[in-house]
Length: 157
Image (cartoon, rainbow, N blue to C red; front, side):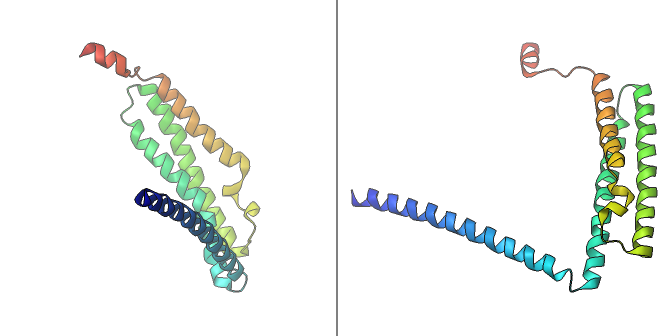
């Protein structure tokens, strides 16, 4: 009986101290983030590095997504959908390269710290890129052969 009671005490202690550790780690993370972002106002060069990172995040994300989808489009069975996809992806990639160049030029000439001044954070531009990804995905999904589910595969075997 004593051994079983010891297991419950050990389980309670483990759960309790895990909860306390989780709360303390969140508290330390929040304090660290406050310290990090508080330092941004005292170190001007760090602000510039941070802003360049913020400017390049959407461009890096969308350019990599468009390149991955462009590579996957090469194996699509419909030729018309391939051409439409390549056209839309090429337009989007060119737009992202141009807007990234304009944003970096704006940053190095004026050094704005508000993201609203940069083209890559323009809401219609971001929405049109997301819509382009979904539009091409839907077009490609509707023009491929239906994938067999597990029941159809089991019936063939």
